[in-house]
Amino acid sequence: MHPIHDELLQAWSRYFKDASIEYSDIHGLRNYRPKASLLAAEAEIDALQPWFAVQEVTVDLLFNIYLSLNNNVPGPPVEHRRLAPWALVGAASGFGASLLLSCAAGYDTPAKAQLRTYTEALLLLAATQYDSKLADDYLSATTDAKVLDFWHKKAGPTKLHKRIIAIEKQFGFSDAEIASFTELRRREYETLSQSSHLSFLGATMTCLSPSITDPDILRLRLLGGPTMSSLRTLGYAAFTTWHVLRLVKAKFLPISKSDEPLLIISPQDPISQRIMAGWFALEQTIPKYLSTIDADDSDA
Image (cartoon, rainbow, N blue to C red; front, side, top):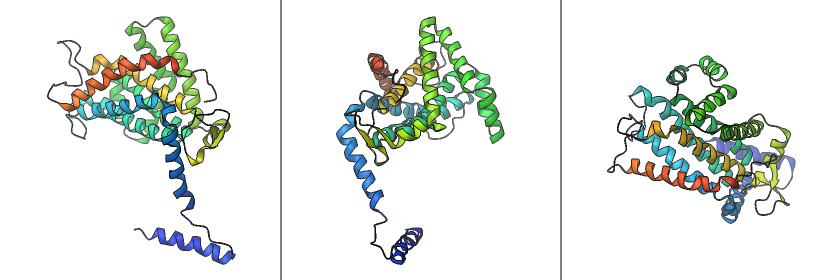
């Protein structure tokens, strides 16, 4: 054990001794917090469905795609065209798992900050699959200055959303559908931004928010436990995943014999079969529940 633990405990104990007041255990709150969070999650996790379960399958799918992009070896693929999707899918899997854990623990505002990056990674994944120059620019951004230049000049929110709209038009979505998708992304991006650049409401709801089982009861979220607003967080994560999977499916999976897909699907490979099963499961279930996303809850 690192000596810092003993040093902190000694300093903590000395304070109480010097102040001549009753000693309080240094581990008190940190021991209580995970227990309270776990008990609340066990009792209330079902209220986060269907989106909690969907996100679990999504994280697994993205992780399996990440492995498959380099033949199940956890390292950068040799083939250049696989590099950007390999990095972005892997990052999305990591951020997706993190926001899942945050929502289960009751830390929804931090989960929204994670969701912003999760969403950007998936949207950039779609954009780079339809613009090889953008993919090359992304891979070339290897210094702080180049990364800043890339996101400001080539993949900022407005530019990235315009790229997605162009892809949606290419897919043949109607003007009404595209307008609906765009409005949802705009509204959610504003909410997610308030979790990264913390608004007063965002700060308040990090600490206090409605109980997921009784919206009239405010609970101290700093002690954990699922919150009502996590339904919207997980729902938007599911929508983004489902929509991006539609846009990139032809790039990743062998749709016709003339394709050169990013993924090689083999009946003998358990990872590729888990990819196909996960992709199919999400396509079959997410559209059924999209109407349950509380997109009008602007305070969530």
